[in-house]
Structure formats: C-alpha cells, structure tokens
Length: 135
Image 1: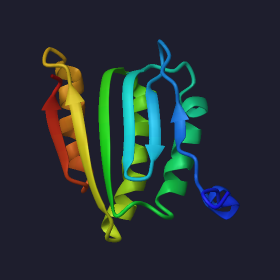
Image 2: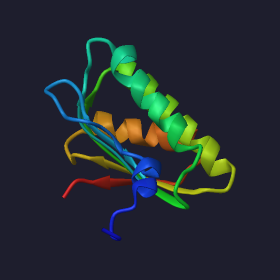
Image 3: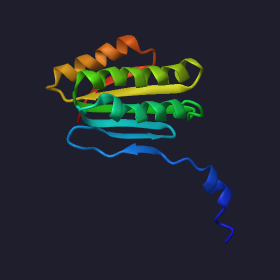
C-alpha cells in the first residue's frame, strides 16, 4: 500500500468549517480560502465567533502564499460587525508581513447596509478589498 503514507495523514490539517444556520453564516477557513456566507445574527457573538478568531490566528501562523477571503452576508448584527473587523485585522497582520490576500465583499444590489459595511471595512483594513454585487 505505497499510496498511503501515515505521516502525511498525521501532518495534514483539517479545514475549519461551521455549517450555516438561520442565524449564523457558513464559515470555511482552509489553505488559500476563507469564506463567510449567510446571515450573522448569533444571540451570543462571542460564543459563535471566538472559535473563528482562534482559527484565523492559527491560519496566519502558516498561511498560503495567496488567500482569497470571500464574504457574502445578507444581514449582520452589531456584535458580528465587531468580530468581522477583528477577523480582518488578524488577517491584515499576515498581509503586512508579506503574504498575499484579497478580500471580495459581495452584497445584494438592494442591500445598502451591507454595501456600506463593505465600504467601511475597505477604509479600515489595508488588505485590498473589492466590493461586488451578487450575481
């Protein structure tokens, strides 16, 4: 069974993933790809986002050479806004140390609040952030 190398399995890192619910977004943090998609109105933002923050801190220890961050939210509460800013600030540290990142902020064309949030983050975060309407 030469095709199976146990040391590769031991060193393989599983992606961090949270499945979507009615009040929380789908989140994927994997080599070269970070996705946040859905509605973000958790009752306890700390409880929901703290593992995501920890996963991002782990990710920037050995990030991919290039990471695409795709965020498409249809509603965000104030606690979620704070954590989104924290997450992007964590990734920004890696960006400023030489790793390549791009953020794609997707909004529904009739959702001015999400569009404005993307613009606000674009003004705060140094990572290139593209704002695109959903297709």
